[in-house]
Image 1 (cartoon, rainbow, N blue to C red):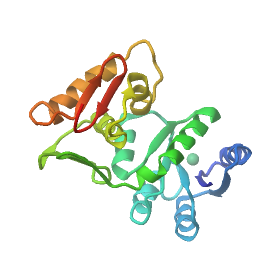
Image 2: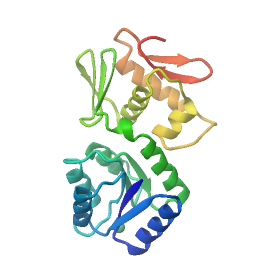
Image 3: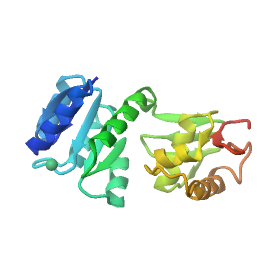
Image 4: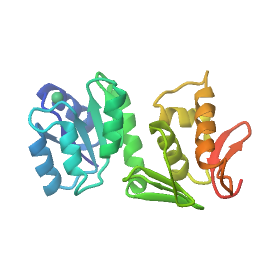
Length: 223
Ligand code: CA
């Protein structure tokens, strides 16, 4: 697995490269956005670590251009945890985020998870019954009617559609949609599922989101 690190701060870039090499990944470093784009056009990579704060083209501009020619998984490294940054990143096609400062352990976990998802990330749209989710256009339709979802509702629906027919536990959903690991209060998940159902299921048949008692939720044409 070959990872491109796009980071202008040499020490951080080298620290990341060293860690990733020790974890069994090969790496290349691009110290600015122009270099990053030319590397990505000339060589084959499996994942990009993309810092938002770069000197010439910033990370958003790099991502925007990258998405015109590649669907490679992109993990954005953002300086602060700002909701607007996340929304902007998702609209531009980022796959995940880490807010600086982050632990190397967490970075590695996110990278592994993204690389596992690679075959699915290639998929542009998901369809179950008459429910369609277009990941690239960030659009959802049920029975050809466009449905507006919040950021988290969209992420939640995408997760369920990617795992059609599989039970997703509340803690899996919490960690994959909210990036939090909590065992105490999974009410957040239940509330979000309720809101999602009211938009994509309540007025339609068949019902697609099913509660699996004592376990979690799954999305499928039949319970
Ligand atoms: Ca930087």
